[in-house]
Image (cartoon, rainbow, N blue to C red):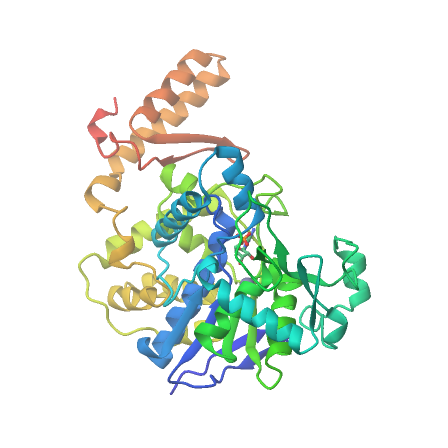
Length: 461
Ligand code: AMP
Ligand code: ZN
């Protein structure tokens, strides 16, 4: 094997040479979505990042030797609340949301994992795991709940490097009379008649969130596997709790060897999240005409361990670049993949380095190399190419000059306070899919690819 992959391991805080437990069966688990609503753009970041790692592992170890599992959390109080609000059944909501998720992630070029377990289909495995933890003295039942006893696991907090005292101080721990230690977390909780529930040794109830990943990873990947991933907001408490559960139940195994966490997608310096309300969905962007390939390109332009800001300007630049590259590689058979790009990708998934190499290949008009190398990170693929039908979407030089002339005329109208004329020009351009934005650097324009008149350049008067 010629390519040595190196990955930054959250657990050791170092970049390490990656050596799979079994190169014939490289195993990766990534925490998936809670399915009650459309995925927001932040949710797409881990999907795209771990998709690229999946592609790299398949390239290095062979497509049949990689096993990638990503779960669907389809039992959660947010889902129950959504069902109560809308009067729809839980199953209807989770089925619909799961379908949306798969469509939206396919639109940004993510391959489907090898397995996508739904939590509700693995409840017996969770119950068995909880029973095992009770038998081994790591969990206790109290008032219809089962709690994990954090005092029973000396390494609790090691992943995120916090002491239990820090965690108590920093987290909003729920104090409850049945908890021996306020940090103890729920493995099982009782359900009333309106809530989904399963029969268990502790009465009718439902699992806490963390236990599902421990149970499904164990069932599908075994006691020890190679890589566990997710966003860094999951490091504590979710991943800390997964480790406590799995390492206590199987003390002679390793659970996950390498822990990888992507940094957050931000909007104006704050994490994009549903609870902060500063989010937009992947579907919103697709519907506004931002191609999935553009979203993927922008995401991969920043290294996964750095925070990244989504901006419309980045999307516009990415679209320009992809249009040029698609025009250059149209009908070209992929040639040799760039060794420098592969090396960058193997160096802790340095996708920004791969993109720099793509620019270099495009600069020397190596279309065959560009196409092969872009394919390594899932760009310029046939699957993602539909948005860019070249004849219709590439404006001619003459057209660009006309638009520029209108932009100048509109500016002149504005400076003469002839706002009616300025608006007329803006509306006229919009009607054929040319969208203007006024910013500090002046007026820029981009094409709205959902406009059916787009490509009808003659319509521009
Ligand atoms: P959730 O459905 O909130 O549990 O999140 C699903 C996945 O998306 C997890 O891996 C989260 O860490 C990740 N995630 C959530 N918000 C963001 C964000 N703003 N940027 C990057 N990843 C995120
Ligand atoms: Zn998980």
